[in-house]
Amino acid sequence: MAASEGATKVRGRGRRVWRIVLVVVLVAAAYGIGVGQSVLVRPPLVLGQDAITDAASASVPVTLEDVGGQVIHIAATGQRRVVLVFYPGGLVRPQAYEWLGRALAAHGVETWIPVMPFDLAVTGIDRADAIIAHVGRGVPVVIGGHSLGGAMASDYASRHASLLKGMVLCGAYPADNVTVSASWPALSLRGGRDQVASSADVEGGMARLPAGSQLVTIDGSVHAFFGRYGPQAGDGTPTVSRASAEQAIVAAITTYLATIS
Image 1: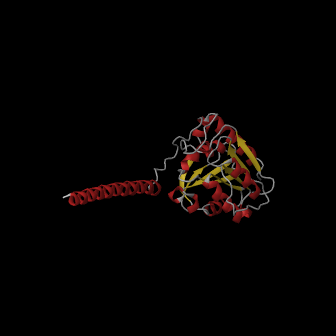
Image 2: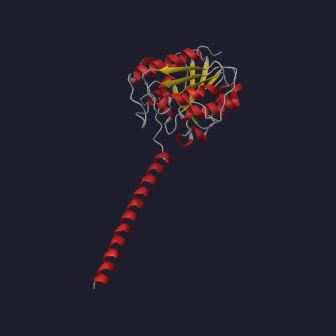
Image 3: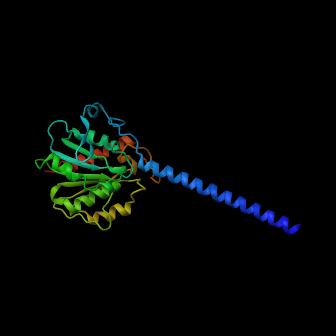
């Protein structure tokens, strides 16, 4: 009888273990499906949503066009003097940077923000090709990007420097195996409280940018302040308002773009 009772207890424990294993597997599968779905199924692309800073930015013409794929086109107000092709950060919807294009429009900057497959610039590194061909060679083109988008913009610039007149990196740096050799200097912006793109990585990346490139720190700003997409996991705590950080970002970029010819 004792042996029978022991065997029954063992079988009972075995069933409990298998039930626990099954629950763990199902939870892991559900989590994996959720994560995969969040990557494969992207939120809607809505122009003008959380992109208006003031009355001037509200009047800027913004359209969704097809130039080698979907791209947000933000026209310059007044005479167009420079074109900015801006690659979004990883898993960030491109309209998060519409605010920047609207703010730059008054300075003669025409901005193009390509919609990347799955919102990952690594899947569309050469999207700038079609845009540059579309705008023609009569105006200087600058490439830029935030975070992963900036790294992919650097990759593009390393292979197509002759098509460009500059580059703007926001919380980004070239990959270790990428060096941008060009006759023009780049602008690298970093948030003073950015904990996603570390200061060491951004500073180290300067050695792989063209001679004369400038590093500007946006004091008190964080990684997520370059785009309007909300807080980001692992980021620092800002000590300035988003509005203040955005003003400093626009000022630094317009000062740099004013030197492009």
